[in-house]
Length: 99
Image (cartoon, rainbow, N blue to C red; front, side, top):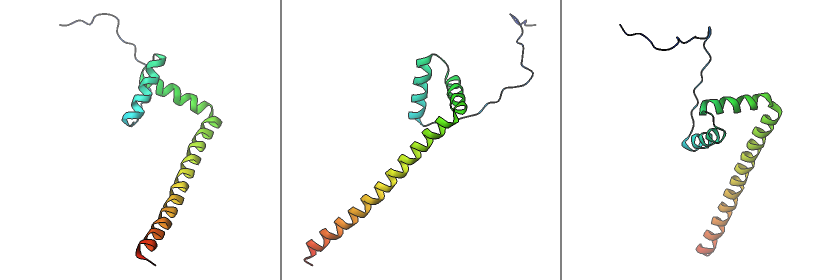
């Protein structure tokens, strides 16, 4: 019969919650570098940064809104460039066809 060495592990009465997160390779590399820079695990880094964001909802909401505003502006610019490109193509076609 094999005996266990050391003290037995005291288990918490309730289990802690666990969540999985899907990250791209670039996102994972950024988070891993941040976790390594402060000397904690990736899970600890995600938990700490998530809690920090949740505690300061005004700043978090502002950062998300700024990102969404930037994306909205970029899509509007892309649409305007598409219109300009269409007009340029029509002018080039008219010049090349002799009309």
